[in-house]
Amino acid sequence: MAASEERQSIWSIDPATRRLHLWTTAVVLATALAFVAWGEATRPSAEPEAFPQTVSTVLRAAMPLVFPVAALTFLITEVLGGGIMVLIDWARARGEARRKAVREAMREEGREEGRAEWRDWYERREAALANGDPFDEPPPGASANGRRDDSA
Image 1 (tube, rainbow, N blue to C red):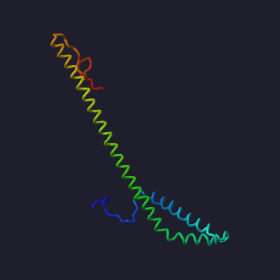
Image 2 (cartoon, rainbow, N blue to C red):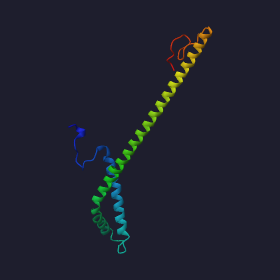
Image 3 (cartoon, rainbow, N blue to C red):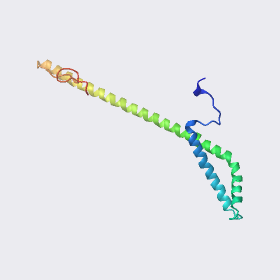
Image 4 (cartoon, rainbow, N blue to C red):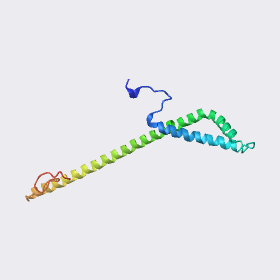
């Protein structure tokens, strides 16, 4: 089994997204702590001079938030982030398909223009030969010396 196909633990974090996980966890945890602290500070029986007691109460109230914070972090980084990546990949594929269709249409248009040039040259040549007139016009794509001009 190749290294990229080995099953990893559900708890392992891809090194490419580790920083995103840590920052998301910090933001979600800080937000949760801020709400708990705000709720504790605005409680009617809160005593302003009992700051250490308030901090202790906030931390005790925040302990049950560890698993919800971890779940929310996972939801944000993996599910929403993964969904966004799927949408980005889909948009890229769709854009590439459009670009490919436009390139093919432009190629076909160029082929048609080239065929029209050759058809016009051939008709002028046949008309000149039918009238007995000399025809010294070089074919399309050829330079004045008779060689093909590949510089364009």
